[in-house]
Length: 300
Image (cartoon, rainbow, N blue to C red; front, side):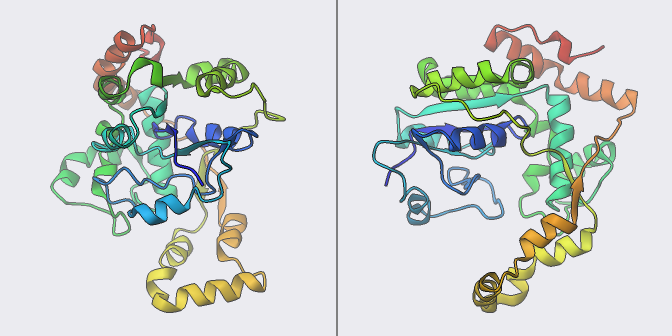
């Protein structure tokens, strides 16, 4: 049994799932089967969030005593409380943050929300325009339990989020990774992560793409599956157990038959310019904080 000594904190759609799976296979590292427990994001009402210490601790029951223990929840960087709470509980914790061009990130994030049914407006430009109304509680999709995750601009304010991270976490205990560097030299970035965590430089068999963009074929079928626990109430647990015992697994069926590879939406040029103008101060703040030239993130 162990407790986490390192955390992959986000940002959303910046490669955290990829890094989680690579590290999970490392012989000296333990990561729980559940990615995204979101335990420390107690200011956000997130579906499937683990909200009690006992259940959270149980995730790490099987960790060997010799392992470096970690967890990955991409909501932590966006959360107002998570990093504060992590460092208050474990002042020696190591924090890994992954970033990318916020214009690209926020479009991929919108696609993910559509896939998990938290967003019902599939046109990103229109979804972006709804932010003000949604702050007033209007146009919230019925299956979205946390309206704040629909505030795309706030989710994409990576400069502010990293500034806060740096004010809380000592330089020696934080590692910020850019998606640009991962694309250019994934092995080199992974070696840097292993060095940061002070484990042996054991590499995965291959650096495969993980967590590609996905889309639902049938939204209503996905909603039915998502609402099964609520619809079945106390019967859900026993029925799921019985189904699994005879090989009936709705989740796997859904993944096989109702999910396909998603295509990136081509945004109108005027909207790309609007997004770049909105995030320009955030990109400039990141340039200062990281000492990197990120001007290529802004095309005009």
